[in-house]
Image (cartoon, rainbow, N blue to C red; front, side, top):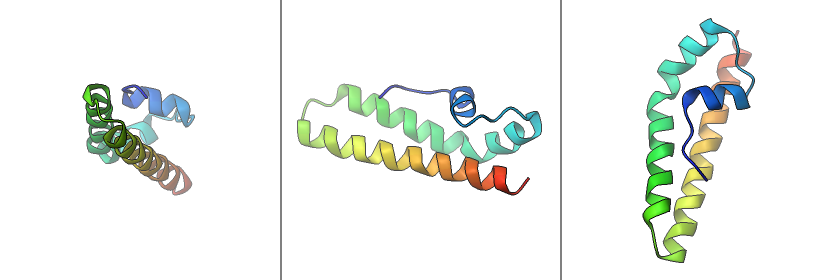
Amino acid sequence: MEQKTIELFFQEYHVTNPDQKAKLLLLLTDTIYEYNMGVVKLEQEKDAFKKKQIETDLQETEDKIKDIINDTLEKK
């Protein structure tokens, strides 16, 4: 796993509308920061068990980001 910018998440989920991007920016900034800090922790962790826990946390955070994007896009 690697750090991602908000723009990269927009590309992954095909968000192109500037108004939607502006709205999502407010909703996602803290969660994407949390995701990227998790990636940093994963890179620094030596213990295999803790790495697995961090990977699970990262997947949950990425799922949360996906849900926020999908919920916002559905509300157009």
